[in-house]
Figure 1 (cartoon, helix red, strand yellow):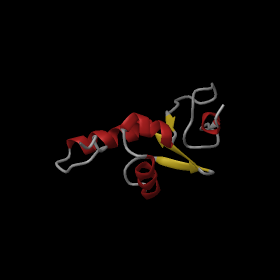
Figure 2 (cartoon, one colour):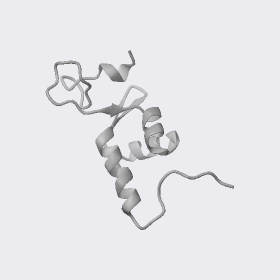
Figure 3 (tube, helix red, strand yellow):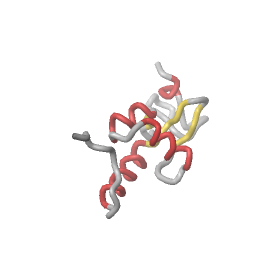
Figure 4 (cartoon, one colour):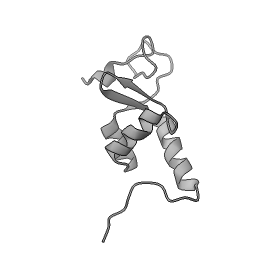
Length: 91
C-alpha cells in the first residue's frame, strides 16, 4: 500500500475510503494526475506549488492532488479562450 492510500481526514485533509471518514475525497499522486490530464509531471508540480489552480497538499516529498478540483481546473482551461492543456504530438 502506498503512503497516500493511508491518509485519512482524522489527521490530514485528503482521505481515502477505509471506514473512519464520512465523506471521502479522491486524492491523486502526480503520476496519476499526469495520466488523467495529459499534463507533464513538472507542470503539475509547478501548479501544485503555486496553489492557485487546484487543491493539493504535500506529504513528505509526495503531492496529494484533489481529483475534483483538478478536473474542474482542466475544464476551466478548456473553456478559456487561451491555448492551454497538454501538448499534442508534433509532426
